[in-house]
Image (tube, rainbow, N blue to C red):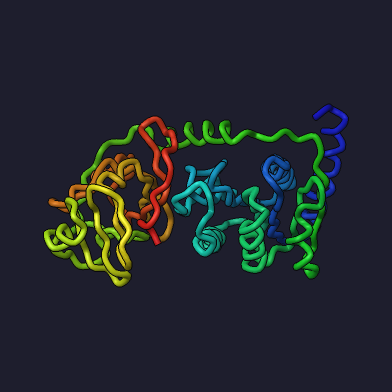
Length: 326
């Protein structure tokens, strides 16, 4: 973007900030496809609002490219400088209800009259329904729509009752998927810095958002005869059976995961519904009912919550585990 274009952009952004400051308090929701300037605008707006002597808080809903907390989390940065994270457990917001719940939880901890909310670049397909749910849940005082070619109109036309500012975007370069992964790799490593492997006994902790250890232990030998392979763990759950065996498998009303499925899985340590730290599962000892987790989090937490995404020790993402969380 050349200097003339930047000057025009800043003049337009100043008008938007002036409109925000006309209100005694204001909840601002930004919408836009990837790399349309949402985050840059919020940094600019936050700075200008503070320069006017007002308190401002920022909520970052971009679980893939968070500027506040670790990947896989929603983040809140209050005017006081204190931050809060809400664990989603993936860099893609598959679970819309969890995202909305987390957003409302963070909103309850805001300490400012001016609230700026950044969102992901998901605006097509299921992204539409997520953005619609956010608007309906938040009831923002102002929606700022960053778009190149009217791509947000399919969402915006459903909300004529809201004040909407449409910001035309031009000449903004896209960040490649590989670059985004590289950024997350550094963030994973940053938030796991100085971690140690800690051993948690099942009897001493509570797990959340996983079928694992949520039911009644069942006999492995019987299931081995049925499946024809080695079974390391078997439990009866309301949905049927949850099994860890030598290979993945498919049976009606049965979840069968391969031994080692948990290695590298990201988890969140939850206290009062807030994520106080993340960890990476090293392994599960099914005989001793122990979980080995690489983390720098202290032991004062309510739950260990399971995510979907897996990484290695270098922060490189290795894929997802399905049929484990609900």
